[in-house]
Amino acid sequence: MDPMDSTPPAQPAPEPDLETDVLVVGAGPAGLAMAALLAQHGVDAVTVTKYAGTAHSPRAHITNQRTVEVFRDLGIEHQVLEVATPNALMGHNIWATSFAEQEIARLLTWGSGPERHGDYELASPSSMCNIPQHVLEPVLLDAARARGADLRFSTELVQVQQDADGVTATVRHRDDGAEQRIRARYLVGADGGRSTVADQLGFTFTGEAGLDAAANVWLEADLTAYTAHRPGTLYWMCQPGNDYWVGSGTWICVKPWTEWVLLFMYDPAEGEPDMSPESLVARAQQTIGDPKVDIRIKATSLWQINRQVARAYRRGRAFLVGDAAHRHPPANGLGTNTSIQDSFNLAWKLAYVLQGRAGEDLLDSYDAERRPVGEQVVDRAMRSVADMLPISKALGFAPGQTREEGLAALSGLYDATPEAAERRRALDDAIQLQNYQFNAHGVELDQRYTSGAVLDDGTSWPEPQRDPELYHHPTTHPGARLPHAWLTGEDADVSTIDLTGHGAFTVLTGVGGTRWVEAAEKIGAELGLPITTHVIAHGQTHVDTSGRWRALREIADDGVLLVRPDHHVAWRASAMTDNPLTDLEHAVRHTLSLAAPGDHTETTPRTRN
Image 1 (cartoon, rainbow, N blue to C red):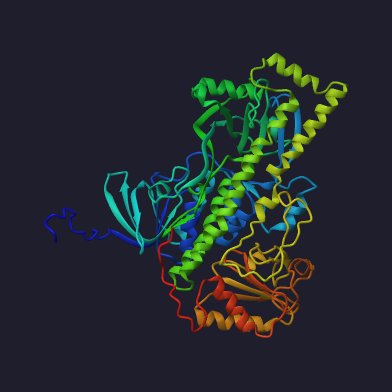
Image 2 (cartoon, one colour):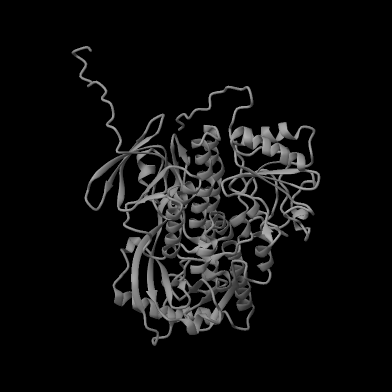
């Protein structure tokens, strides 16, 4: 070595204390779902979180049908629904100046109104529910542990770096300060809106942070007299002098009808709000309107509204899921739902690559499929926030007005004048606009993927017959979530969703489609791939006696659907082809980024930016 060269010779990295295939950082809903899913797939994974346990306060709560389908696939739907508030008690969104005063407006939400109930019933075997985060996380934790997941609490990520072959992380055990080096082939950052993984591995974001500020007040107050007859999840209290999108305080039901989160906004330029128990009780009393109601403050938190999406969900061997990847206000209730669905998309892909069933390029499809969903969700949430302002305007509430001025403006809403009639029409329109926040069924269910893990069949996506944000449009077009239809089974009705997933690919066909089944069995054996097959026809295990499946499948009896482990259609053939074995194998290999037979193209892992 040149004696003038002061660069020290490269030293071999110290041996790691622990080696695993996947390191998951964070154990919120996305991280716990990832831990449970990876364990179910048989993947060697370690999940660490700096916190001593699961969430200690309600936080997110709305849980939509698609997320409950993920729980159904994991086998924990029953456990979730046991501790959740059912959909039947979620539906009334109420606007009033206080609980004790006359309500101003009402909207039936989450598919509970008669106009929308059938849409939700037809769309999924699962129903929405309201389950606060501190209630949901223990269920996910139990599910992960029951499947053998390795979860380590009070274990904080200190430093992480990656190379072409994997990631090396240093974690600190917060109980004793001891540090440990973990070497993993892949890393999943599920560590929230202040993600250490994103910061240290160079993920960048579009959008802005700190757009507004809010406070959560978790409290006990028996409001049965004001809510049991109009059960709902959200009660919007609008008072003079305030035009925030949450009004003067939004009451979020945690436990009917005695436990709540009171959410209110504040201007950080004026400093933080008074969070003393006395001040918070007074604020709560003001929006209850009944001084006889006892209030007990349980916990408080301050948070900010962000509008951010990662420019890439993958960098090399690291991935972001959940709030680490997308950050937005809670409008539409899409945060936890999107986070858990991120993990559902990524987990099976990591498992298949690690188990040699798929090529490394399959992992690129995670960013291609989920980042557009994150962008859509963030944009929808922000639009929903803006769409709340017309309610305050129609009521006549504005910043700076006195209570007397605001109440006089509200009273004028009911005058027998043309001006008042126009205001009433404006209020009706403003309330109906909230369907895009509370009945946005298409946003909740119709996540359609375009990526290397989908083989397009050359057809166009069906044109929506109704508003695509408000209404679910089932289709079997490659990239779509498989439509739900009830089939008659041997002992009970079974959803088409239930025939798919559970870590396997699925082939669905009908009368005259047995050659697809034979092809699938041969391909599965040759590739070591789990492929389940179902012929939906009379005389078979599952029968479409209602005709609902025939109306939705968009293929002939002898056509085929190839469905991925996450219930999304990978490929379809409208009818039997001349070479079903060749065609199905091509679709499987394409979906899994596997080389064609005889093609020895390199498929070993490589680093990506």
